[in-house]
Image (cartoon, rainbow, N blue to C red; front, top):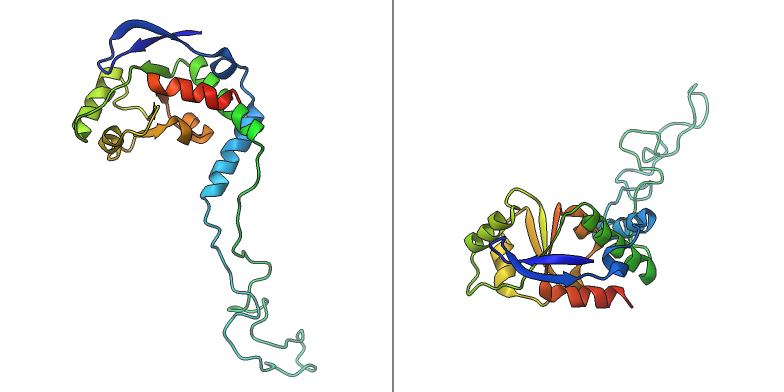
Length: 209
């Protein structure tokens, strides 16, 4: 498919780029997208939760009452889970939530995410640009020109560009990544996806393996 290339002022450059149908024009696979997003979010979890169990609760191990004759159930320790302040039964323990996902599924998920953005007409191709120095105001002007000032956007660069990255860092609604850092979650989490011309070759190469 052909997509027009615009400049950072939002004007048509008169040029078009050919996007691979095998990356940007497939039928989205919702289950692959679900699995990849689930893995991404699972990897963000620290898994440091912990509840004290019976052996870890502070307290005496003395038998709190005699075994028989009280009219109530027998009890051996104040650390029993039955009592207030006692240990937790089957409480959370530190663990890793990460799980393995095949590369083929991850590639399919990213292709599906790209294709969804194309179907929703939320994908723009912008010619490569740079700033002489990091300047948030310049990046805001780019967002205004592209009509993305009040929208959550993701800019994808071909190679790392420190000035462009630092210019966007203070903006909550916009983020900048390189094509090698892309994830399905980030693509779908943005309302609009902005691909710089220099990123297209790397994206298609990575997803065509």
